[in-house]
Image 1 (cartoon, rainbow, N blue to C red):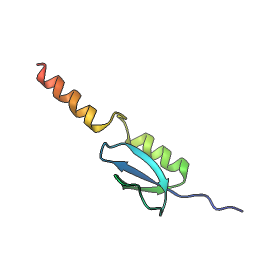
Image 2: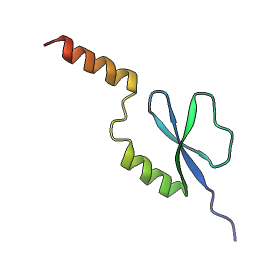
Image 3: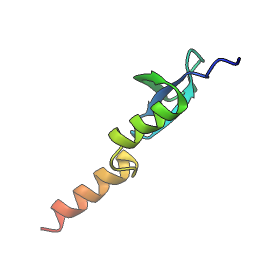
Image 4: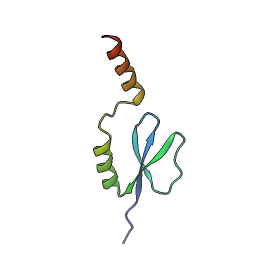
Length: 70
């Protein structure tokens, strides 16, 4: 019987989400978001919390453009 792999949800400075093997060293620019579980559970969590998949910098530019156009 094989053990089910455990993953963690990680986030970068652009608020983009990804899965990474739990306990593994994170790549530069990524931090643990705090959720760990099976791949399926982590994907469900990401689907729930990552509502706007556009990078943070793009969302900010668009918001600035919208307020500047008024």
